[in-house]
Image 1 (cartoon, rainbow, N blue to C red):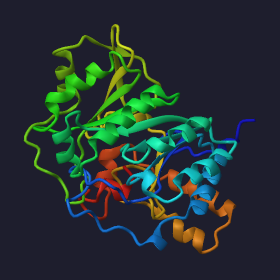
Image 2: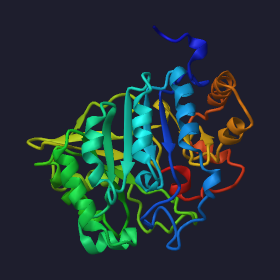
Image 3: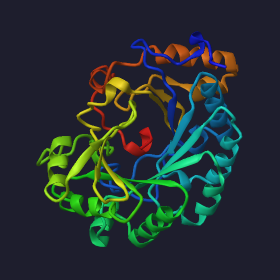
Length: 335
């Protein structure tokens, strides 16, 4: 029962959007250095955030246009009251095949049994940038390492697929790259190293050294014979396996953006801004459109039109920004 082509989210480059990243909140319990300034960010007034009902409706319309996967992010999604109730609500959408979650792990452990019971929840991405308590506290500006490490252990034992997201920060945690790879030996986990991006609410930070994809891979290879494995076309990471290791390793070229060609995703921020690309400055506010009484058909028409404006890649998206450089916080954009 294929949707007819007119009713699918296909951009002007023939790419089909089947994946949406929805940030359910801009609030977070941590203050990671590459994500926001120490004093936090100016958070949106609660009334400006999409309600869970509005989110459900937007996702329903998107799934009727061929979206099958959703990733829920924040801020920290578990900070938002009744987030687990929202997950249950989303599970009722029969067109949705997979619900994935990105979390910092500080508030999730008690919810793991409930998450395991929901068939559609497949992948949990846990953000963890250091395996050393002091360093972890310095990066996150909070003292929650024991909870996060326990969460890692609990998720690894659970039936959920676990990925660790590690933002590679020059001069700070590059010496831990091999320690993270070592975790894949006995743990069924996919470690993903992410090139750092300057989305911390205050613009580009000084990069003393360029730890890009190539450099990260060279560092891994100083200790491990990492062999490439084939990933699905729209994967954001280039993936590798070390013989005899249970888990896998991947590198996400987030800043060098060599993955844009097969992009299959769109983003929605906590206040309902529709983004075709992480690097654009937002193309449309769906929240106001909804609150002004738009019907589902009007929403569909809107999405079909907006997707046609998707730029070829992140460099073009950045060049087209009206607001100048990307300086907003990842927490506002939707990590």
